[in-house]
Length: 505
Ligand SMILES: *[C@@H]1O[C@H](CO)[C@@H](O)[C@H](O)[C@H]1NC(C)=O
Ligand SMILES: *[C@@H]1O[C@H](CO)[C@@H](O)[C@H](O)[C@H]1NC(C)=O
Image (cartoon, rainbow, N blue to C red; front, side, top):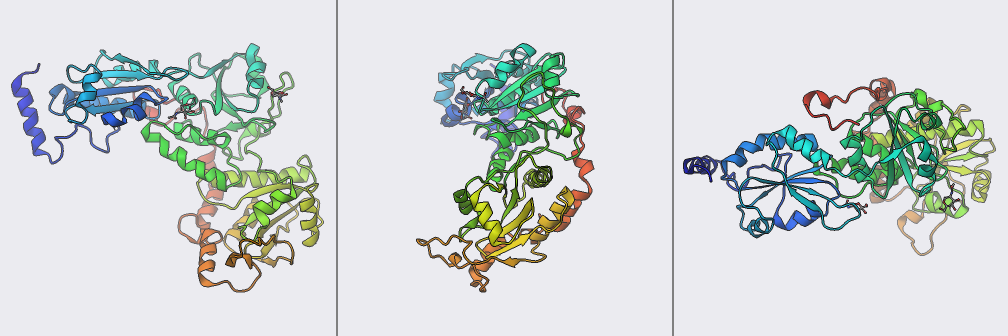
């Protein structure tokens, strides 16, 4: 098809580059290199729309396409798969043939069918520019976002009422590729809705005053949470992940962070939104719609309701540090303050992906709570303790104020192993009979070295390691404004460097 000298020249240039013969796109390219054997998994079964380039390394038009294609891949990162298959590779040849590829490059758009089944495949014959490619792909991203109007708000909220939901309030009439991609990430996990600013009842029901605003409804009776972090995919996914893990496959560039998050969500008690400074946080909701929402910044910390659970989580001979907030009821004013401080702190750690021991709310009506408090001789309305059954100590939060700063400095002291540890009275730790491991002797006796090192590194030593150091924590408290008061209405910074703004909400 091409002038023979062009091909010959291309071959010559490529041969001069070690290893370049095999593929046009390097490992670090934003273009996903796919082999025939991976096509099914990465493309055909993806929940994302993909564009696939079938190419041969020696083909000049393929080389010419590379810059535009890589640019398109960057623009579509997190929104769609941009892939390439080297049809010159013997392993891929039969597959390329079976896809009807007759010349290079051939571009095909692969769009998943809603509800599963074979994807739809169509040739892309448009211009070979980044913007034309991006537009064509974006138009074919499946839209699972529910259009939310005043008249269907009640239905939206009551449908699958135990499933988490998120609503984007926007002044735009169209749904962004970014929101569509998020709905794909969380399909069957979080129902994503979009409400326009003119849907007055809905807007009012959630007390939304600026656009865009994203509200997460974790499900059940849990209060809604307003997002006020960066309007970028990674941060948004992370925020939503507190209500449920995204589906496993995301386009390559953005999937790692989301996965890592999942692990964190298990170890720390709750993962929650952004800043404590949000003005939206304290707004109460109008009564016009029975929206399950009192907008707060942080997801509540988990509750321990039974003595069995208390033992399981915190009082076995193997239990690591737990922070327990004993409260008369979560409606109590003092309790509210204490629980909010803990929730915000847990959020802060989750945000920065740092390990922190779990926090639990323990209603005093829980019999386990009553006997533990009695054994520790605690009688205040609201009591917070840290307890490490494995090592046989506990600490009491002695300040009378449960504000954020005091609670945080107490937690910091625990992390740094500063301050007074008290010895746990006998009979509190549930010693497991079947497993007489060394850890089953948690009393103050000096521990054998290996065990000591192990438990030190797993908990209290965390602040000693360079990364989550106390200075780090201090910095965070000093400078929250710089990072946390990001105005969600501001344009994402990436917009400047990318002419195509599909990464915006
Ligand atoms: C949730 O849905 C179930 C059945 O679909 C219903 O029985 C229950 O009352 C609903 N709960 C709320 C809070 O609407
Ligand atoms: C695709 O979405 C479905 C839910 O609709 C989910 O169960 C599945 O895990 C997703 N697949 C991938 C590869 O993410």
